[in-house]
Image (cartoon, one colour):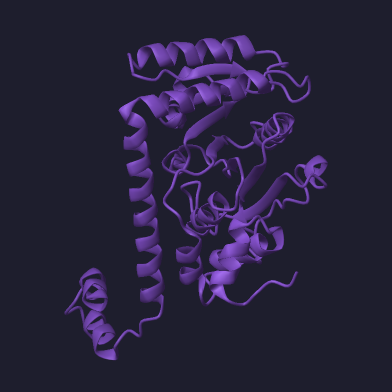
Length: 310
């Protein structure tokens, strides 16, 4: 079936599960092509969507292997799953360095799995505006579960917590001592903690460090569980998914669940507003008299910037 050019038709095909329409829609919103905003508006519904799980952690923690194992487990439960993998940007093309053709090859032929790689485009918060837009599209494409795997940039990677229902922070043996762990800042956003590559030496020490840090953090309404996983031995993924559902059930019965949803929507609106302002500023011509005043020292660049925006 050909992909329609009409925005409403394309939105209907996305909501109906058409994968070619989905791929095209994501490309349109990712690149902010003409009609992108109208397409997002046509696709968007504010109702409760699929389970959105964020997977983050330092580079080399085995996030991609863990996500692949999660996808396999979710499919055994008969649920469909989409993966949004946010990768580093190529300095030459601006596209994702690590593509979906490299990862999760065993899922390529599975019609119940959809994988999309996107670049950070220089964004250091874990998610770019383009990724936020793609997540909106995926959330209305009929999947049961969406997994967002972020690029893994350590301390800066916190925005995933504002986009996901459950945030999984992945660490490994050799991750570092307690001081290094506290500097990472990732425990603050963790709903669940995973000691991945648990078949390697040092897993016990990492789990002890994490347990101690959680205890030092004091009592909270939700205390992150610590789950051991190993992609090599194919262990722990079922227990991890059980914990994801336990956290989701807690959100559904605690007022913090609705509070989180409001924060997610507020974050989405702020991200959209920032992108909209940036697009408008990029299209502005700076008047010669304004640059002249800055050149003469009559005006500083920051005041000039506010003048230009206003």
